[in-house]
Length: 174
Image 1: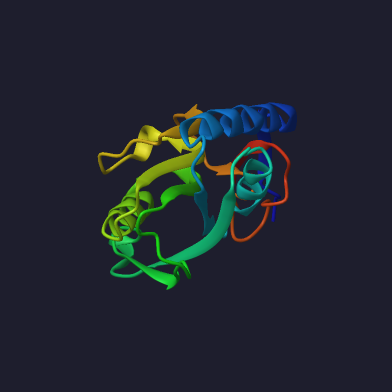
Image 2: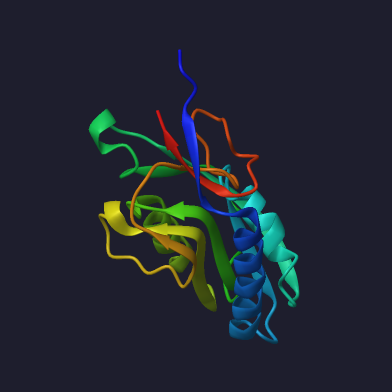
């Protein structure tokens, strides 16, 4: 069996430079406010770790993990928490941190669910905003990189639990 081919799309240096820039943008938006940063597991963990170190804010961290259910053709459209945040979000500024937003179903579920919990402010950041497959109306407030196509791995994104550890972002070809 032939190994998948990896083609670098975004270098490790470009990823780190953009995360630092996003840290400054997010700090400016939430200046003077404590912030609850919510990492969407598993994929966002590397982006999340690097991003929170670039925030010059009073940051508390939370983690969520989602599970999809339903028929195979509707995967991703119906979401439930397999791990929810452990604190109240009422009256707080909340930043949802995703690795990639493509169809938008997971991010839309999170934003709708968190809005119902009455946060003071709610924003979304994603290392990759991949709009070719977008199926719901959704804005990524702090996008890292706009990419149109390709199956992406690296920097937390995986294929069958592989390649998350890569420092850049790569297109995987089987």
